Amino acid sequence: MENTLNIIGGGMAGSEAAWQAAHAGLNVIIHEMRPKVETFAHRTGNLGEMVCSNSFRSDDHEQNAVGLLHWEMMQANGLIMQTAYKHRLPAGGALAVDRDPFAESITAALSAHPNVSIRYDEITALPDDGHWIIATGPLTSGALAEAIKTETGAEALAFFDAIAPIVYHDSINMDVAWMQSRYDKGETLEEQTAYLNCPMSKDQYEAFIDALLAAEKTAFKEGETAGYFDGCLPIEVMAERGRETLRFGPMKPVGLTNANDPTNKPYAVVQLRRDNALGTLYNIVGFQTKMKYGAQKDVFKMIPGLECAEFARLGGIHRNTFINSPTLLDDQMRLRARPNIRFAGQITGVEGYVESAAMGLLAGRMAVAELTGQTLPPVPDTTAMGALVTHITGGAEAKTFQPMNVNFGLFPPVDGIKGGRRGRKDRYKAYTDRAKTDWQAWLGQMALDAA
Image 1: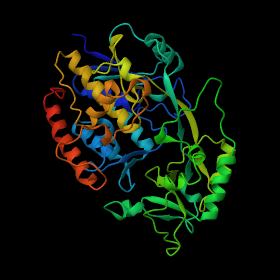
Image 2: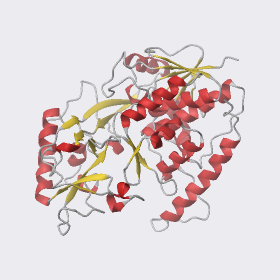
Image 3: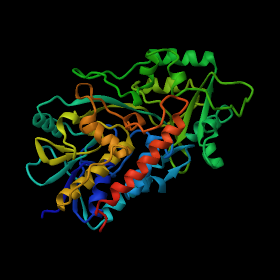
Image 4: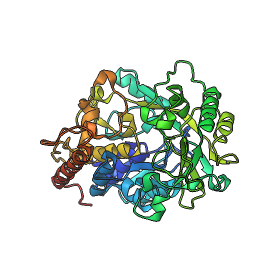
């Protein structure tokens, strides 16, 4: 039986799918168009490059659905998670990584695997034969996107992702800023002081909002519409929804005490998170933006502590394409019209690094089962993996389908557990306990780890 799996795209999903399949004994060919064909957001030709935040979000596998997804991926020998922990940076209760060594390690691991070949080429059409996974992510090339659109007979849905700026640490005024994780989260002092905080008074906040709203923004091209994903809204779009929106979002002042002025409670706080192991780079948390570069410098330098900030990267915006998976994919993530092709990652309508990698993990394992003649049991929808794949392959309403992060709202209720805010902690623990049992049982039914 033909045992070669072709994967288009070497991002989070494609890299994870390749690792799973190669580890199970399949020959894998990764087709990555970078660096020959560049994108707006990528800087290198490395596999698994992080283009926006350097955070995999919460690492709490007992009370958070994202943390549970981390745990499930580790149990399944996930390359992305193993590498993330290897290059972990202090980030309170979150899992943040040193992005460049992370991508370099992903590239090295796959390049060294005897079952993996990497071809730096652009695939512009849907293959007629062979076994394929399309994991081209939010920046699918124009030619391939057009081929997908032609095959499916439907308009590709799209929204816009915005990238947050990165600041050089030595340009930040630490007489104003201080180090503290919100609510002092973390088990070590390093974790409890993982975030850099810049305080704002009410007058400073109001002036900042005024400047943000007045700043010159990147214009959309003709025919484009601004359908943003709510988990990655540009700050100016949040500000347009109400002057207090940012203060109850990324600039909320709760759980923090200004070490430089402990008796004066900030009206708002801008947080920055370490972006590399050296601690020389910090990204402004939640400050994705579509302001023009000159305007960004003017507005962001209004933040106390960033008056003399120097930027390693300014923010930006890019189109993010995804398919209407509930109508196009079967429960094995195969394209109904061409079952030799699977889709994985963000192009399927999941949002976030972790979710994208998780769908790559499942697609890789599903492909292995098919190519080796195994009967693959359905992924339990009680698990984080199962809840996500169920959502994109039929659980979501096709007419209103939008990108989705993993969350407990996708999980079936636990019998005997009450709803409501007061019972939330017990309910979340019940979700994760059940998921862990069901995930381990599902993995135990599969003979995919022979290699």
